[in-house]
Image (cartoon, rainbow, N blue to C red; front, side):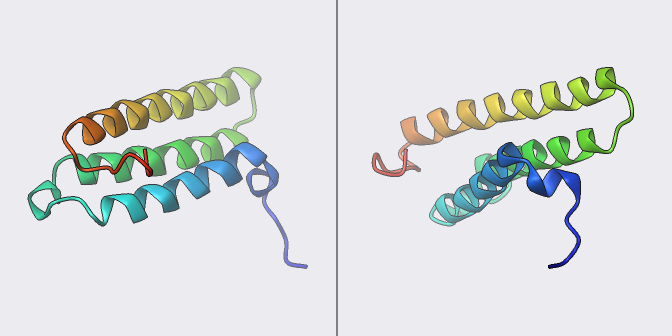
Length: 97
């Protein structure tokens, strides 16, 4: 088996990676005029969740690790906000929501 970094063993990171893939699939269906709007924002914010979890594992102090976990949670709330808005605009189907 290949070497695994510590973040790859975290269930929360695995879930956040799955979220990124779902966001990319769902936003594929967004209107073309959203290419640089909500579509881009959702994709970037979802990637930031996973990225901050990853970066936090490389930090030495608990304070630094906690900071990156807090940032990941903040980006997750940003994703939630944007999903709610996208649903209300009719960009996301009820079943996907």
